[in-house]
Image (cartoon, rainbow, N blue to C red; front, top):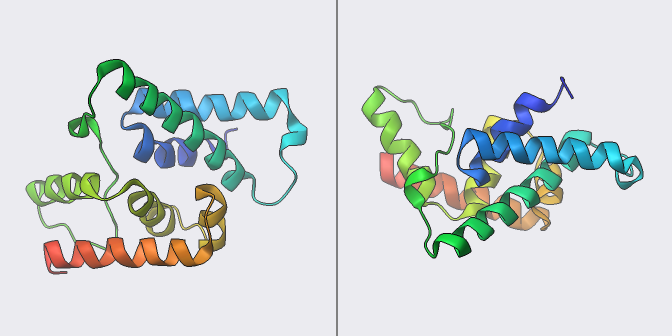
Length: 151
């Protein structure tokens, strides 16, 4: 747990939107592993945990959206992208806000690739999609960031 908790919370924050929800989703992933270790069939443990935590966070986010009847994009706080050279606190705020406007799959794929260093095959497993779709999502997100910030 100690080896993966920080990374799992950072990754889950992209979907969850805040620290408390990200922590809850990460803890739920570890609880599910503890209760049913056979569910992890081998491979990359972090990728498996991210998949479980992402599903927990998405389900909670959807439930909250249904309960409130609206989508609150102001609470989304995506992590900064190391590919973008941020010169000021104001620019960092703009980058974070823009990352929040990207489609969830693009935002998550880029974060997992650029920030967490996961391979595209691992990201495909986490997102439940193909490697080609992951490559396209990363390319699309990068293109949009470059166009917006002229990097």
